[in-house]
Image 1 (cartoon, rainbow, N blue to C red):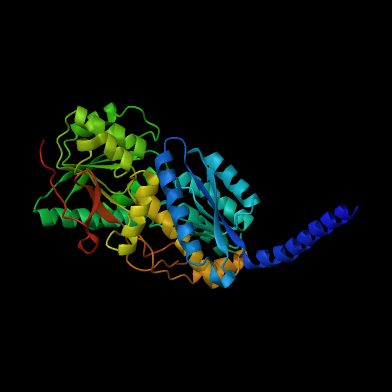
Image 2 (image 1 turned 180 degrees about the horizontal axis):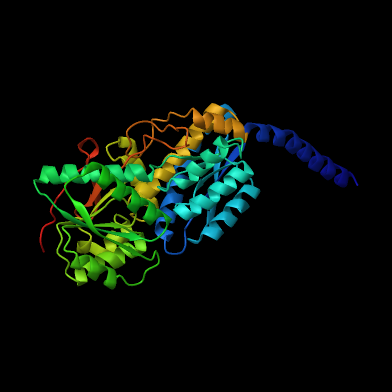
Length: 419
């Protein structure tokens, strides 16, 4: 009996000590801000989705290691992730699930059609959505219009990525400058594109920019193909028949492999392959599989700014964690989106949706890791006018920024050497 009382007293004493200690520990732990991120980590766009997710996770870890969101008592960021399976309907369903699981801010999606459907959901659910990657203008434009016309009170959708008009204008400008620098004058250009929202938007923008600039080269044929194409022999034969100096593809990663392999198979003679802006022509797996077939290919697209020492450090960790993959646009823009979200939360000192949006509108974030013309800011459409592109080229089996000069890592090679 005595032993029982003693044991019980010891147990209760320990329990009391624990009860006293637990609240103290809980008070010492900052609360968590949950960020929802939907990415295509399976299906035909799995590689870029995995790159985006890792980029975001590295940024979350870096921010937490630096003390979290100090205005919220050191609140830590937590990334809630979901797989869209490269399907628009799944993207929306998974985004809704993450919001129900407590996501207070959204990012990600990658595919323009997926971004569009999540943007509608974000507006309906009053969840701020910082789009990391999407060139299609419709998601932010539609949200801004719904507010302007009084259909909704507040815009919750914002984008750090450049819009399609920026891609088109910069592609024409950089191509013109590179041709002039190389002292060559390509005249005939064939445009090929993935027949989806992204591909059509990019293609229209590029054609409009050519018409506005009159650069000295013209589009002699425009050839669409299915986003999920499994054979491009007919399209490449048509392109070859047009006798182009330059082929300008707007392609997804999977079809980039088909396209470049088919160009080699049909021995298509070109001064070069220059995309006006597309994923799939600089991805690690594409380079590993295509090898010499992708060497000297150029792409006017978004990219990490490797002139910044901080970007180089992140890239080294990224390569270590990913098994040697490049810290390219997918990882870099997702990393930067988390940076912007943390900056917004710091200034908002709140997770209330409207307080977050008010802070988003006042953003001027200059510590990003991507090529840009200035800090991340948001205009009346919810877009970042300082987001920009660079001309990449595959040189020595690695993507290198070659234009404009102020961000270039290496000198471009054009026309491409004959085999």
